[in-house]
Image (cartoon, rainbow, N blue to C red):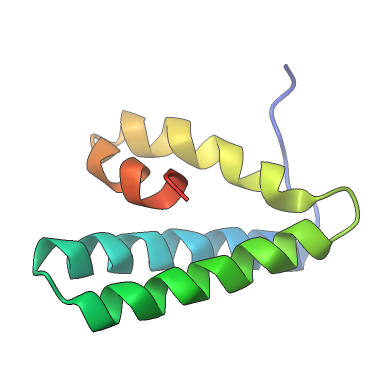
Length: 84
């Protein structure tokens, strides 16, 4: 399978935002802040919906995050990002 390279600036921005939301969601779960976790989940849903609405369903641009997060030793974030 070929690596996915988001070439659209908006897609790259959405991937970065998804990553930030993912980390915020993990931290909210860590301190048991349900309200913050729910807000971040809703924000994540909006990002995923926008990526899906892009031509070609650009959610595939999120796939490289799984490998990069694991290589950085931050695999605990992966569960919160991709169990949705």
